[in-house]
Amino acid sequence: MRKRKPLIIFLLFVGILTFFSNINLYDVINLPENFYVNYEEIDKANKENIFGHLVKLALNKNEVETADNKDIEGEVIIKLFGFIPIKKVKVNLLPEEEVYLGGTPIGLSIHSQGVIVVSDTMIEENKIIKNSTIQNGDIIKEVNGKKIECIDDIQQAISSSLEDNIEITYQRNNKEKTSTLPLIKDKDGVKKLGVWVRDDLSGVGTLTFVKKENNQFAALGHAVTNGLDDNVIPLKSGEIYNCSLINIEKGIRNKPGELRCVFVQKNKQGEIEKNTNVGIYGNIENIETLVDQNKQVTLGGRLSVKPGKAKIVSNVSGINEEYDIEIIKANYQSKCSDKSLIIRVTDKRLLQMTGGIVQGMSGSPILQDGKLVGAVTHVFISDPTKGYGVYSDWMLEKLLA
Image 1 (cartoon, rainbow, N blue to C red):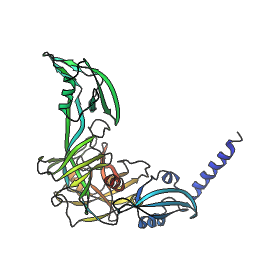
Image 2: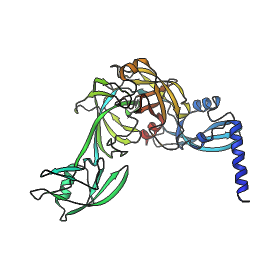
Image 3: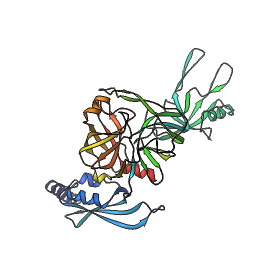
Image 4: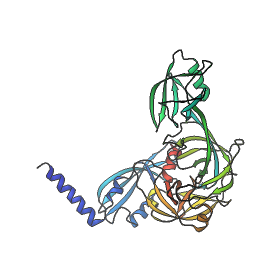
């Protein structure tokens, strides 16, 4: 009991101090390492007392630069009463250059490393055969120790097996598993796995921003998945294309809407190099058809984001326009997430056209105080006027990684 006394007294002290000084300890604790910031945002955070009236931030710039001499490191020291350090976090200084603003819908074509199970049942001689181990959405990566990159690799691995069972390694919910499965023989004696698979996906998203110096792009704000679980599709290669908006299916309660777009997989505009949990990234070959080079914007870090009025940029009217939204909540996350912000569409024009946020708008830039601070990622199924967004500095981090 005696050993617990100092701890109890300390916790009581922290609780009383937090109550009377309005210190946002939860937000302080959840600040991640290596987020992006600049001196202007530190000053603004101190003026607005985002962590409480008695908490101040100081930014120390280190003379250490990354290989490309663009990404400069620093350290933010969070101080109680302005002189008692309570936390130190490593940060990167936001690039000073502007980026081209996105908002344009793009066609996406993803070729996976491994094959994606799209049906775990087969009909063979009028009988339904269901695989008891593999599920829809699983990504098969190896068969009998052989790497699988396309559908042909599966059949070759099965054909070369002398056994009636095979060992497969597959990904489910971003975790790898290994199982032994019995093979199925058709009436001609040909061995089969007993599932339907594919090795590519296509869809529509929205371009978020493009770096002026090298045409690197960020888009979508969330991962390309199989649509059934959280599996981030391992990327073998991918392309982006111009696409045309032909119709808008308006979102209503419990039924998300959709941008109906068409694109032809030729004359690619760029290549996708990364598929991450906070968006897709790559290089654009021809930016003229995807961005208005007269529309440039500065990237803002998470410390500059606050609940209140903001804008999203979208092409739903046929041209890139800004629409009014409200940032309801800005989360201080310790880990990279595509649900950093909660937003609400308030613009009457956008509500009339789309009902709020619809599928295909993922990646639409979020602007606040003239800076690009995030991108739209998801819609609330129960309320299409609301949705999630991701911080732009999460996206910048993935782009430069």
